[in-house]
Structures are given as structure tokens and as C-alpha cells.
Image (cartoon, rainbow, N blue to C red):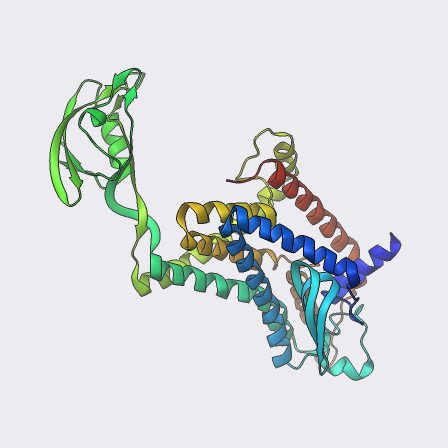
Amino acid sequence: MSNLYNQVRQEIAAGGDPGGPSPKGGASGWITLAVLVGLVAWVASSNPWMLVFIAGLLVCVFLHELGHFVTARLTGMKVTQFFMGFGPRLWSRQRGELEYGLRALPLGAFVRIVGMNNLDDCPPEDEPRAYRSKSYPRRMLVITAGSLMHLVAAFLLFAGTYAVSGRVGETGDVTVVEVIDEVLGETTGAKLAGLRPGDVLVSVDGVRMRSEDDVFDLMRTRSPGEVATIVVRRDGAEFSRDVEFVDAGGDRAFLGIGPSSVDWVDLGPAGAIRWAATDIVDYAVESIRGVFVVLDPRNLVSNVVSEEADPMTRPTTIVGATQVGGFVGREDGLRSVLLLLAGVNVFFGIFNLFPCLPFDGGHAAIATYERIRSRKGRPYRADVGKMMGAATVVMVLMLAVFAVGLYLDLTQPFG
């Protein structure tokens, strides 16, 4: 147990793999990979959109680490490893001072930059190229580059999807998505008038219907038994019908339709860019709020013991996110999967900046603290060893949330 703790402690201090020769995977590594490939094949056969979502997540993980790698090299830092996956090494190549390759567990990736802090030992000759030896702006650029890549990816996904497919919004028309045959044993006016799903409700008694709220507001002002003249557009042609409101219970008038004024709306390039920027800000705010909601112990306990977990407060894992990806892909195709990936990128980008180790935000907070404490000619170096206790608590909390999320994803799957 102490060896495991020391290994985790070293990895937290180093911001990833602490260096040294990569462990060879051997037969166990390839068996692990074979099992994972089998699971992926099963996922692909059950819902190909889940596979599309997983592939998108792997690309996002790669881009995160690529951000760290490129900025570290550009700022003169020494990078010794770039691996996709964790655990035993399956394949690697050495190119100069950099080792790159694949490891058995595709649960993330890492880039090894030498000299992250005072606990991360590196040879004296490498000290000028260590992360800790560089200026504050350079360290901040490198440590936040992963999150910046997530936000750039999210912007491109949002803007690209909006430019090609539009964005879900108010269309200005009320479309009939459902016709209810009867209520409380009485045939509805919509059924008697021959309305069909896909019809557009243009007006009621001369009042233009522009949103579903207009329809609900209208029904609140009418009484059962009243007759209204509705104008409907079908296949480009308009016609009118006299429709009687029926009693939906409690003397509530009901027309007999399920209306919707929301659909995919064309935006154009300028609108796509504007809405992409707006949605990134909105998703970022919701991501911050959502983290505190999910981490609330009361929500964790209530969701575990509940027969039906609250989707707004329950934690989830890659399993649950993939379930959602498969569901939205099956319902609405690639555009919805891409938008889900955009939202996930925003969450990862913001969450990874939380100012505590082992997140990148923790390293950014240390760099900022050191900058504040430093004086001209006397750089200050924080003792990261004093922060390991808090970092371990954060790791344990994240593992607990992951366990709860995985349990819920398996016992109460999305979709």
C-alpha cells in the first residue's frame, strides 16, 4: 500500500508519469487491450453512434496532451514522454529525447515534462529546461494549454455544426408533433378535424400562432365546448377547420395536439460563430455549477439509494456519456453527437482548471503563488510536499464520485 501511495504521490508531483523506462506490457498488456477491443466491437454492434462518440473522446484527449506537448517544446522545456493510454506499454518509439507510444488502458494520455516542482527531481544538466525554471507566463501557457485546446475544439465543433446544420431554436412556426385521439373518453377536435403530425398551426380565430406557448396561453383562455376556427398549413397549402375544445379535466380546455415551435434553425456563418461563443460561455458556467451540485454528498447519497437517480444531480462516467452519445446519435444523427462532444470538451476544459492538485489548475495555482511570493533575483519555490495530503484527499474524492457514477451508469443507464 505504501508503494502504491508513493507512486501516486510521485505522479501527482510530476504531473503525470514520473519518468524512467516505460514498463513493458507483455502478455497481460495485450490481453487487456484485446478485452477492450472486444468491448468496443460489442458497443459498435449494439449502437455505432457510441463508437463514434468514443472515437471523438479519444481525439479530444489527444488534443489536450498535444497542447501541453507543443507549448512545452515551443517554450524550451524538456519533454521526455508522450503516451496515449496508461498502464503497461504496448508499443513505443524513441526519437531523440522523446519516447512516444501506446499503453494498454485507453483511459487518457500524458505528456512528461521534467522538473514540474521541487519534488520532481531531474538531472542538473536538465534544470535550465525544467518547467519550474521557466518564467511565469511560459509555465501558465504550458499548463493551461490542454484546457485551451478543449475550448478551441469545442468552439470548432459548435461553430462547424451550427454553420452546416443550424442550431436548435424557435422557428416562428407551431408544428403539430402529436395528435391526441381522445381525452376522458371524448374524441378531440384535432382528431375530428383530421389534423396530422407535421401540420403547421398558422392561426386560431385569426390570432397568429408563433410558439407553443401561444397555444398553451390560448387554451387557458378557452372553455370546453367552445369552437374555434383554425388555419393549418400542410405541404405548402393552407386550409381552415372549425375545431371544438374538449374537457381535459378540471374544466380545462384542450385542442388535442402536442405542439412544438422548436427545431433546427439555419444560422449562417456569422450566426454560427456568435452562437458558438455564447454557448461556450453558458456551458462553462453550467459546468462550474454542475461540479458543485454533483459533489454535494447529499446528492451522491440520494442518487445511490434512489430507484430513479436524478439526471440533473447524478454523477456520470465515460460509460454514461457514451450511452448519451449513442442515444442522441440514434435520435438525431451526427450533428447531435458533435454538439455533445463540444459540451464535453467545455466541461473537461473548465474542470481541469480547478485550482487543486492533481489537476492542471493546481499546477497553475502553484505557479501563480510562486510568482506572487517571488522577488527580483530571488525566485520563490513552493513546497509541494505540503500539498500532497490535500491532493490525496481530492484523488480519493474523485475515485468515490467515479465509483458512484459508474454504479449508476451500469444500474440506471441513460437512454
